[in-house]
Amino acid sequence: MPPFFFDTHAHLMDPAYLPDLDQVLERARDAGVVGFVAVGFDLASSDAAIALAAIVPDVWATVGIHPNRAGEATDGALARLEEMASAPRVVAIGECGLDFFRHHATPDQQRAAFLAQLAIAASAKLPVVVHSRDAMSETLDVLGGSMPTRGGVMHCFDGTTHEVTRAVASGLHVSVAGPITYRKDPTLATAIAAVPAERLLLETDCPYLGPQGFRGQRNEPWRVSIVAEAVARARNVTVEEVGRVTTDAACRLFRIEAPAR
Ligand SMILES: [Zn+2]
Image (cartoon, rainbow, N blue to C red):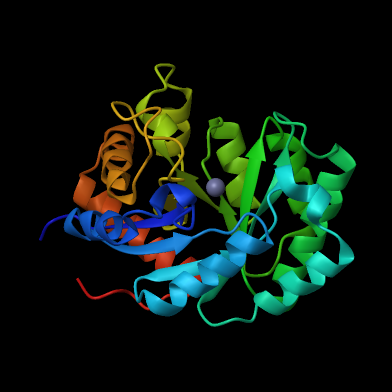
């Protein structure tokens, strides 16, 4: 059986895909991608993710406010997000978290928006998609006291084995994206080798983070297969095995019925 994959973090609503989203999705299916999670980063993109998931059977949606947009997380916006959480095919809250690399919102705004979305995830009984940049330790500190019961995923993980251990202990899954294909330092590969198979996910974060050979281009979900190959090398297993365990983990985390393949 050819390998299959689940792209757990794709910004399919990005204007970059307006001309040819159908072909982008078809190329991914041809490469073995059996499902996509369309991730919202503000109210408009979250609405668009719900709308896309309503018409494309292998797309599911998340709703959330990215830490760079934390200034938009007013009481009204958070109330709207809580309503959107109960829309059909919404499988998680996020992406939300902390980003101390960019300073589009203050740390206090970011922490408040993150905590509010963790509370929404808890009350909606959904997992959370976490974005953390230059803020891993603080992000894990926040989650330590406020992790929703359904857990969540640290998306685009780019840290150490110690951080994997902390993330997994807190109830998080660990999702791997393009950076594993271009890190020469073995820290990330070593960390990814330490993730328990049942907590490991794959993603592209497209249209961002093209893997090696495609950096700087519009990324596409089919390239999750390239991420899978790098993960297979890091863990010394086959790409088929990586595809199978990460697809199973995605279906369990997001409570998606395993797609036919
Ligand atoms: Zn993202």
